[in-house]
Length: 376
Image 1: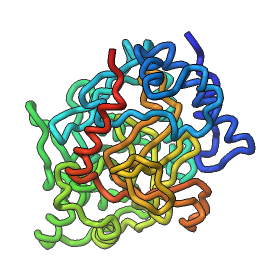
Image 2: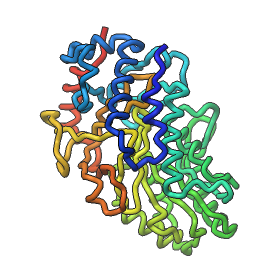
Image 3: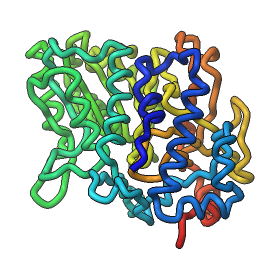
């Protein structure tokens, strides 16, 4: 089987936000290699590219990888698409808030590549502290058997960056399902404040907001968690989108009620279909690491949009061998900006999320997706 050496070279770049001198060559070689890999090892992928006007021999000269036909993330909610290396690989699922769950397969090298990206980003921000035990509040699902849900898998993984003293889960397993336990969370936070260890809060932001609101309704005293505590959100507001509050409001309340500085509150963007990590900088912007590129697509014409214009978020990264998910269009709307417009010192592009596409836009996306499907 073809070894993706160029892909590994890109995914092993040591600095997540610094372009080496030969970066363009490294990225192009990796993309050419991953497309050739899926042409050989993913059923029907080469035929699918050809139907979209991209002959096999053209791949060696394709350098604008935004021209590579993408798959829509929603396509993985209806189809399990895998390469030869995905046959017996780890399977993760999305939370399926719309009633459908994506099923994604990750062979050892693909999930390892994504996890090493997280390693380097946590190192970059100084969040890898192996000598500093922490208490953890996981705003996600208490494990029950094998953890296949992508968000729960991620939160468990993120506990490795500081030793675990003890853990509280916001979504407790009842034997049949999971239930939100705000009183248990409040009790745990109170105990954590008294113990004095740093606290790491990971997971869905909606549940943290509900806890803060409950504390205020109960007129409970404000807590002062250790100053090295860290909040790292991920997974969005899901079915609670109608109650979503601006991030700055949430960060301010965390500072007021738990004593956690806004600089120690960050959000992460990713998905089970595309787990490359996009993490807020000190200015709370999602920067694109060197392992990927981002493009904005017009929701009507699907044309590539310039900086500052809104559209579908399209990610390109060659990290994955177990499924042809190296060019994926998300259902989220965003605007893309050059790194210099942020002011944090990171040179890579960054994006602002604008929420999920409207029903009209989603309908348009679904119709367009019929032209991008792998079929016999």
